[in-house]
Image (cartoon, rainbow, N blue to C red; front, side, top):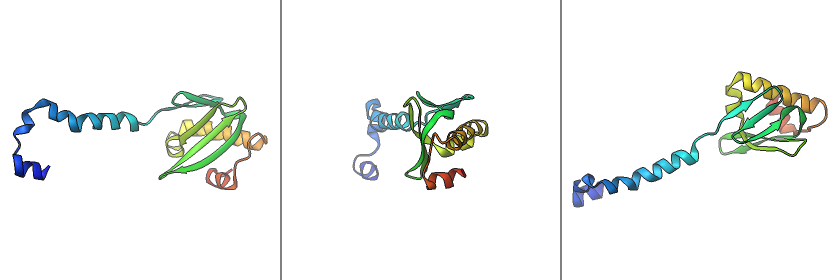
Length: 124
């Protein structure tokens, strides 16, 4: 940008189509990186369009993705949530309470057997 200003000035700024060069990729990045949403009921949790029955979990693990801890769950019917941010879930106390109780129930009943690392992180 500095070299453009020195060599050619800022006359090109009045041309509207040149503004599309920085604006369109920015809009695309916004929508591709936009966070999804999480919802929960008494027996289920939903992350974007995927949901699982939390009192029938067969697989519960926490994986690291960059700086985030992601919760992965599979229920008895084979439905999966592969990337639920643990921080996002814990930020909402009501949602986390529902989800955590379901995870604890699934582990206590022997349906799910998470790794030792996951047990330590979730304090199971």
